[in-house]
Length: 156
Image 1 (cartoon, helix red, strand yellow):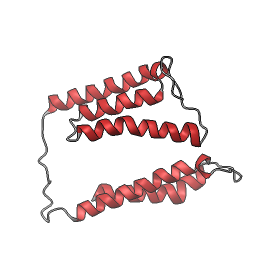
Image 2 (image 1 turned 90 degrees about the vertical axis):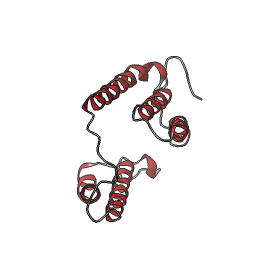
Image 3 (image 1 turned 120 degrees about the vertical axis):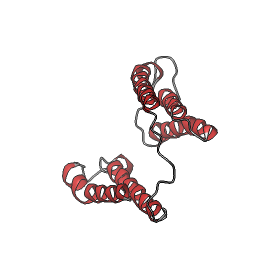
Image 4 (image 1 turned 45 degrees about the horizontal axis):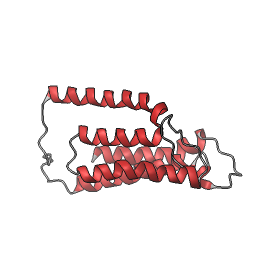
């Protein structure tokens, strides 16, 4: 509940104070998606929606405030996962110039999903492939923004 309230307050701060005062944008941008304020407002909106979702989930919790899942105190396992995340991040930085952004993001997404032992591996792999491809198609072919390509594989 508190995290949801914090996310909603952060979204309100971003929408009404931070973005209007600190993000410069020309008024004559023809395509609103290419405006420098479009994506900050989009992220602020999603932050507010996530906060509202967390508040709704908090209101549905049992009255005693007991967690739905018992916390696990396995410190060595937590350290191994932290090391795994560090390896994925380092691998991402190493692979970006070689494979390009799309292929590297696919691998990083899939590796992260399996690192946290997702309950939905098919959905994770589907999203790992489709989300980077759809984003590439939008930015490269609709918005006209160049997406970094790798040395070995090039997308159309």
